Length: 180
Picture 1: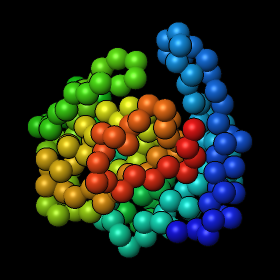
Picture 2 (picture 1 turned 90 degrees about the vertical axis):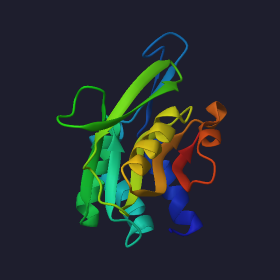
Picture 3 (picture 1 turned 135 degrees about the vertical axis):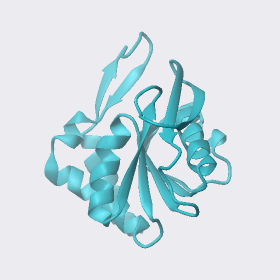
Picture 4 (picture 1 turned 45 degrees about the vertical axis):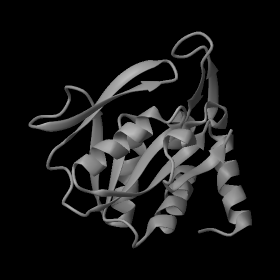
């Protein structure tokens, strides 16, 4: 884990490369756009290195939730020398799947993972861009555990604390680089 000063610097890198878009995807929602981070290879690399250092040797695979969890999770897994498992929106995966529906801050959604995505006992790091209401993260944890793996922790770039998403993840190791 980085020292306090390093953690603050990484949070500042993330904050400086997060754009707020009002009324997206619907009126009243303030969308946190991470595109500026993803298009800055140096800043994105700093964030990936921070997360990779925190979880090195503690997990066997990285899982990411569609779509921005893919953008974060795939290069993170590569950096860590691990495999990556995509957790997708319903109907996007071939073969037999585990499926979960959940509520989010502006509607409902369904996600799934193939039944053979994880080996029994795999230690999984679940990544996504934003922790909002916690519905997506809780559903993804259920999918992973339903496949016989263990969720070791969750890494989010941003947490919208006013939506109390951590409340849906009791007893889980949830980390966010930047808390709003």
